[in-house]
Image (cartoon, rainbow, N blue to C red; front, side):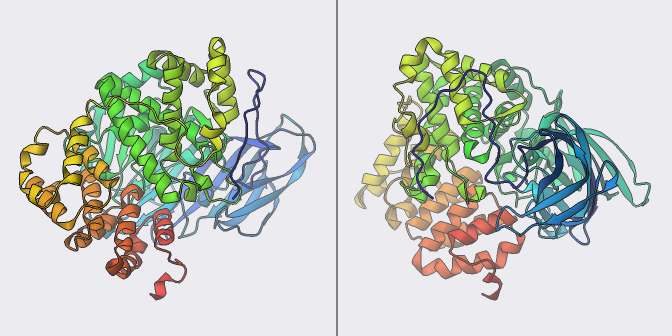
Length: 633
């Protein structure tokens, strides 16, 4: 893919530069837009499929409208109607990651401004990329099966035929039929439940989402779930084995919510619930409206990893309320969300804490750039995703390069209070819509019209369209990091003779965040000699720490230093949970340890059926495995 070198072209304030297409979607968004979905799901755990019917209320944008295209992926479509009349349909050729276009010919002609209800009857595939079906053995309770979805970026099409692009937003209503011993929840307000009139052994749960959302925020979970109240508008949901731990861990949710409201404006989604998923969930969190998904790796026992919840709360404004128009503008979602998350941390902790977290983020960005390669076009802030699977582009770049740009602008414009004023105004201006980078930038120039001369000096091309690290390295306050930096230097410069000078007292006063930072700094250095990591274990006893962020970094450090005893522990962590932030680097570290390369491949092949489809696909690429042939190995 060629490197983009695109300069900013000013546009008239208020102009909406709507793209007529999305490189990750087949759907005809220039001709029509979906306004509402009415979903009916029958969850079949025996066949691992959803038997479904969806009615799409579609608004026509052009005259002489007679056909439309929806995104699908591995769906078995049996019938299509338009306003109750049979409609002809064909499924086009299958694309590697975009799926298959569903081309529908209407039995009527419509004009601009008219609406049509298109109803599709279909069934999902057992291998649907949005869905993970867990056996009872894969759950905490071991008694009941479990289903969860993960639609971001473009997997909703594998469970709903839709315009699967973030440029289109719609409301939805849903009914979900499940076995009576299980509970269904969705990214929507719960609207009651009743016995399934067609099957007395099942229950139908109802949901409504009155705020327009893009398709990737549709989410469904079915399992043996319990809930606990953790605030005036919040519950935590999980299997009973995790639910009380989760209620403790996320006890500060309401404080975070009210802090975010003070910064960004009213919370428009009604309820804010958190669902702790089984370990195979591939992300730290997912900001599904009304129901944030969270990995159980956050359950550290001391609330130290709850900043992930602050991030998902922030998405309620930046991502869910104001959305990137296509995945090429993903940094608009994530850069602003990291900025808002750290402003929440600033309010609840301190400005020094915000800078400390920003320092850690800069290191994560450096690692992503190193992994991709400094000239890789996927390290630009606004990548060209023509012929690129958005899952392959996923990294910390949009998060941390985006944050670094916003922090740089904050410094130029006059500080956090002034720049947060812009962020809040930007949210109000583009609420309920989807935006491009040009629209964001145009509004930035409009908002700071008295400081355009300063903004014109920013090297926009380098920030937006040049690979590698940003053109400016922010100068963060290092107060909280200084002790970590000092201890890191002691270890990297230590000779064999010096090892006796280290003791448990070195880290006695460290917070969890500082210990994470210390290990992160060591990962940026050359691998330590094996004698050093063994001594570190002797004095700090890191093998016994259960905090996932600490354990992940410590095991990577050990494997890099070729400590063979750590390989088993690293592969255990890589497979006991499926959070890609941990699983992919741990597998890569073991793979790069030459004598254990085959073991990394063997363990992956033996465990991949238990992994989330997206995780399995990306780890296979990391390990240079053709996943279609790996069953033979």
